[in-house]
Image (cartoon, rainbow over all chains, first blue to last red):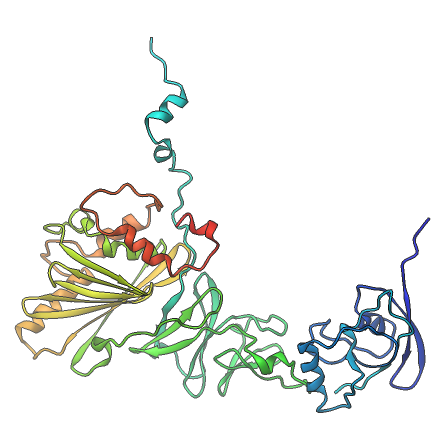
Length: 112
Length: 346
């Protein structure tokens, strides 16, 4: 039997400061694992970049994450009116773990 | 003893295609053409009114804002798909969806989401609801239809008979034809049918000119002179015995095989009781088909039976004496934006 999927363990700090370890698979946006893993991420729009509710700060690892797309940038700018957006801010619906992702740690970001 | 010749011999003798097409031919193989089309009479749409209409083979919501602007949009809210023509309301300059009160202006831009703190960024960048470019001219509401939402490539013309002082007439007509708009328009260059279907005295000589989106026709040495602007607007002036009357026709593609023909009839404001006034009225009566003692039949009594039952022959068998049918079709093809495979049948 060879049924072991590649998997990453992401270290997550919730808004309340709790530390979680959440397993993530490739090809599925990190947002879904955070949402389904009760990390406090809503991910309302399902990855359409229209709600800004899956905001995270990348604490470490995760490179090489692709740069923000224009649409992700626009959504982050829209929430920046209400919350602190940092250079490390990403929308987790745009973050995918891969085999080269090591030691990814994120903090769930504030939302508007 | 005789027997049928084998099929391959028949094929060598005649074009079998011509004989066997009856079932494969279609009545209306056309897409909806692009262009400016009549939507409704301006007077029929009051501020605050919301109405569902079928045009261009789909449903639309027609509304007029409190400020008086007419809008024609997709019915389904971009948010969660509610039909805004069922329970939607005009609020100020916007159409408001009944479901969550998202609001859209006549250009389809989302102007209000009453609860979200952060509007989706796309709403700041573009219209999110399909809205047809819409304007009011000649007392009529017009929308520009393009299947890929491209902006208008030409403007509606000035029509003195509808817009200028010194003209009058409020007669109108509206008829439903069970065929595509191209088939109706094609009769405009089919001069031979005027003699045989309508019973005119002869086949009128005619000069036709095609340029860009405009077709110009001069029939019977100035008796009928006019232009077609795209597929949805024709203006023809009929002159007789020193008086003239103008027919403005604006047919709507309701679906691929149903068209609504609409016409306004106007004439110069000739002196009350003058011969010219009488002649102009007679011309209009004839156009509508209400004239008595006419030598030829108005379109109403004879064209529909043909339109409603014919099939479209992409390769018609034409003879000398037919009008510029193929030139017309080539001109009309510019209004179709569709898969080349589909256009082969057109």
